[in-house]
Length: 349
View 1 (cartoon, rainbow, N blue to C red):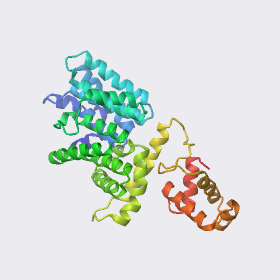
View 2 (cartoon, helix red, strand yellow):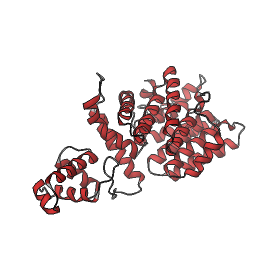
View 3 (cartoon, rainbow, N blue to C red):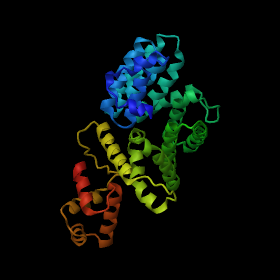
View 4 (cartoon, rainbow, N blue to C red):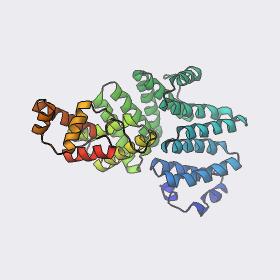
């Protein structure tokens, strides 16, 4: 709560200078504030705080603030569509660490670099990291190496080894729950939901996602979902219909929060594509629209009836209805007008 309040203070309020007098590391509060603003997806406000904290930490050679700040900077750069900029920020951190005797920061930077490389599909280097790191899913868990464990889980999932990833995530969950680290538990539930979904265990995936959303909504956290990209979008689109049908929780995740996450995640995907408009035929949910579904969608935009579409395409009326149902599901809508509007916004008609 204190950091939330600090996030709305003027940048020149002098918080860091005041707290340094009582032993708080240089730049710590500015960086912490930037991290919170990042999670709220307020990147424009996060950056000035982050740069202030980075400069103070670098001047004081305070690596325990400088390195996490660089990782947050890398996250912001990636969120803005610059993967190369993110990698450069990580490399700057590696160079800084090599100039000192505090080499313990290198594994942290290497692990985050692997996460960036995974998003670019550079699997060989990720496999080398896994082999050289000697981390075990059954080894003693050290909280300071949390980022490395998450990276290992991601590499295992990328390799299709979901069982091992889920074992590791279950152990991380026990540790985080014991220590009351909600921030970490959101990440764990998100990865569990993605792993279960890839295994075809949709019910377990939705249950894990529900836990994550229930923790994240009161905190206003968005980036933990947005940063997962298209796989998370596929889950989010399916979540509200699932919640309506299956959830047994008295407290539900608000539809407004989920819809906001869907919208922001989609915007992130478009930005990462490096294009002003997403001209691919991927749908809102991350699943591809088939060629026939695109044809039906164009007729929906022209406000043709089901019978007219059936005649135009020479297909049976039940087939038209099946295509429309699939389109609604993939676009995350529930009526013709919304489907046509969504398609126009995505520029796929």
